[in-house]
Image (cartoon, rainbow, N blue to C red):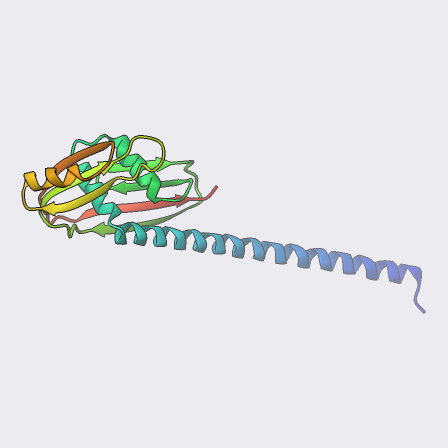
Length: 179
């Protein structure tokens, strides 16, 4: 015969067993979720760094750093190229951070070897509202040709500079942070 106490003990055993199982599943799921979130963030960082390299953004930053252009222009240029709220980009000795820096991060390193030819370049950008992208045109064989080419560009700010090709690689790193 089954007594009321037997049913009560069976229900208690089921409740305790189910709660232990639920806690175990939750702990395993939490660790798995963190691993997936880190892998997604790491893939975003790798993809962003690949696009910065393939578009020539990092090379443009190096050229801009080798001139006396204000760092705020370089910051705006980077902001227009990186579509994340929390990151830190380091190119050589230059560092730019945006958003909050916390312990949840993914970091990507690379080494940039400049493939740009030696010559005169026109660097131009807009300071008004709207697009604040920094763009380059060149190389030109001489300074006069570069100045003539800059006359055809409608931009708020223009600068003509000579870039000498360097064989020294520049270290760059991108760190993305989660919220």
